[in-house]
Length: 196
Image 1 (cartoon, one colour):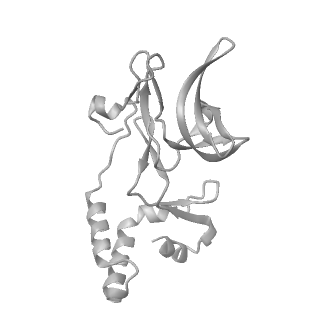
Image 2 (cartoon, rainbow, N blue to C red):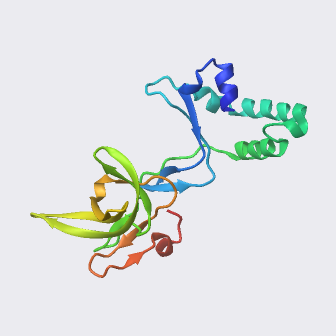
Image 3 (tube, rainbow, N blue to C red):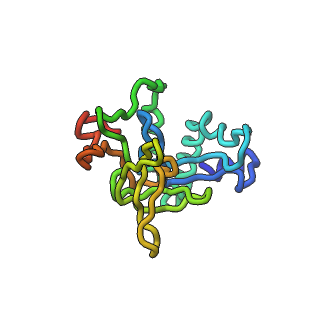
């Protein structure tokens, strides 16, 4: 579909990009990893919205892919079965509503933290670098209590980073409730039965 969009709308290949790994989206105020997602997006900054036709005419793109799969048979880049499954999914979509009333809120005395072992990006000197978090800890800096994470530092031992400099990227991370007094972690999904 990306190639069809580029050719049909005379868009430079460098102006539109796509991804199918390391994707996260926000749900209930918390970033969630997505393992079955494909993203097509404008790779240039500004309000051009080059990918807009793909979303507005998605059904037509699917029909054309289906015709191409019929004509190419077993040599099709996208098989007829995949086009049919995409079409079924597309027909099942309905207008949704953004819910602003739900956020992951920790119980009294607990904090929402990244689970130890989470692979995240740490902002060091303005650059994001992937690291594995080992543990959270509260530090007193003057009169201020600061949430920090100990992380594996390549070959140099361990290092610490403030919570504000940690970003959820990729798919190997999770938020949990943490009690700083007891050191206990609780998975929010077990408390509510919902998927966060």
